[in-house]
Length: 113
Length: 110
Image 1 (cartoon, each protein chain N blue to C red):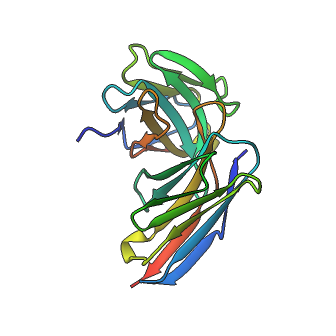
Image 2: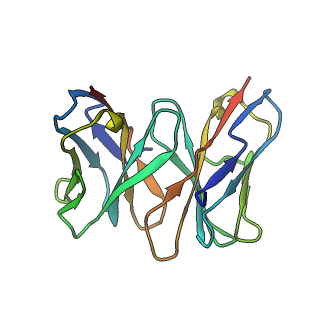
């Protein structure tokens, strides 16, 4: 399968702990996006990479959130000092250069107790 | 805040009937896209319509775009039970990120 993959699929953590999620985009897609989706809502944009450069960050991305894409391939999203309000599905998507269609991974569901 | 807003929030129809969902948005766009999300699964891209297009077809899907009213509609013809899902419109403005609406939950009854 050559789609977008995300790991882990589920993460349960205690409030105050740090968590890290990984996204592997479709090979050769130079753009990578992170979104967050809460129950009953549409996804909300968090941040966007073109190759290894982080070009845009949403105001939703507080100082506790950091994302990297060091070699322009996979990306990680880290949440420090998790809060119960961070509980959500974290979605990753990628797109090819010159196209607007984004391909989404299955998501990582985070539960903060 | 969410860019788009879908209407209705929920729709229930019999298999074989047509389903129409509407989307309104707030600012100028480059393009508008529709996505489907099945329960517990990821988002799947359905169709993209650019700001200079008015109508587009893909299989049983028909999308219209009215930029003067800042609205779009998605028509699914001859619905099937497998079409049961949540449908989201998403807009692209100057940046490349998608702004999603709140979604329409479609239930197709066999």
